[in-house]
Length: 203
Length: 207
Image (cartoon, rainbow over all chains, first blue to last red; front, side, top):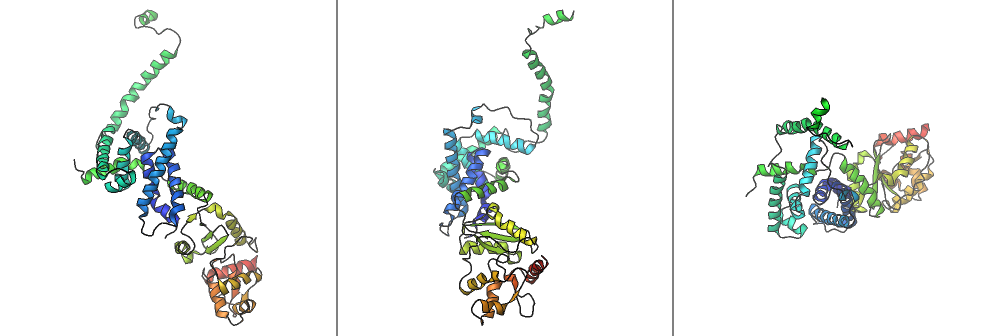
């Protein structure tokens, strides 16, 4: 058997994808670490014929579900607060990750796992079925439905054409000063001037 | 509805945001190493450090320092052998080897004459172990011939075996096999190469 550190180096990315399919980034960190600690404990007694990647995916899936269940019992305070409006995208990669995150959270968990395990981790539908405890047909359907839903949620089958970005950015930029004034006006305690009273004040 | 290769590429592109950011996996690996150590699941911890004789690999078990290896030996090859002969639960945990790294640094700066590290000597057995356990008797900055070490080990005729024992010392530098030289004064075989051996002899002569 090879040194375990090399197993971590080779499969770290795959395990991360599995954890992220189930969890947000913070919890995925926990699950990733717990996956490799559990794998290290069992590593020396694995049969030599073990498919390491498939085994790690199974361990990661279970650890991620454990973390998810623990989180459902003890939610972090931040998760009870309603979703804040998305921050202005400084970085397209970050913006895309946030958007994808939101879209993935919009999928039923089964679809989300089927999509990530099949398309990102590279498991066959049969392997997805084994890991998640459903039938191969159900895994195939969940993956296809998940991809279709994801595309709908992201409003387009592929990456948005660049031309959309400037035009989409322009209206908020023009609208925001007006919105800012509106908020400022309502915050003042003086009665809001009606359209009819305003000309009077000017005279 | 059948997926085309273009669909697959689009899907991969769609999901690329789920990959870890640059550097994130490195941070996760450090965190895993600490957790693995806490869980008592690391059988062989290792780290590397720079030295005047090249980058050194230092490995330790719960017992103590197990192996010091030169670049010339191939660090990956050494780790492979440890995985096969000691345990595959081999993890890079630099903090576990802080004391060893500090003493080695002091030695290479000429500020340390002997090591106070606990050693795990399981990689040397029999006559080799006897020979290696006698080596610290050769004082810092001095040398002894293979024949003299054979005599000190109680087998005056086993000069070649002493040569082999020193040339395969699992703990070079820490166990000073570099102080055993040929009768003609030349350095002789060394795991880190003859140049490295001469560097250590010169370092000790200077300090």
